[in-house]
Image (cartoon, rainbow, N blue to C red):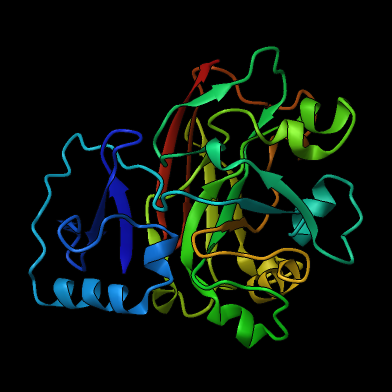
Length: 285
């Protein structure tokens, strides 16, 4: 299934994109697309049954905002330097264990919402990423099979980053990752049954119609199953939590001087095979 949330920010309603591309209203079937729903197999079965029976009302998508596909996210866990080609372009040694940092859940916005360039920023960068959405409480998982059993589905994530704040201002990476609007997510939460191999997905990102990133999840140093298993050794993952799994080569930081960092007025578009497409116009904070 392709699940999404539509409507004004803070008042989104649950919806489903059917096989014919029609937008269907789920608000009469479930209250929201969130951790409670993802952890409830019976509720998900009701959604599937209603969709298969053609019982869900059609929504007019014209002019309808698409919000983040998951509501009430508890935490956004991020994996740094997780692509061989991205580590190479930044001159970093590939990590021997996953690099973990966090984004606050309030950085998450809709896939086409405005992204704000922070005040005094000169190095705002783009990063297309595969997001994992957790479907079952996960702690101390022991195998790849067990890890994948705890995944609800996948989404497109844009891990917007301010490199000066991240690298040159001291401390951890977090101050370059948590500026407002710095994590567009969606358009859809695609359930894992529609993604048979998360290590065979193409990722692309354009800035002002110029292709900047063109990669594949096959380049991940730590694949999806290992990421979920590993993270569960250090923290409990709850239904509705999100894990951003890293970005392929092609970010501004990895390009020759003068590096083409983002400015107000730029337009970023990104997509992952089978998971949908995002578009953001950048404005000054």
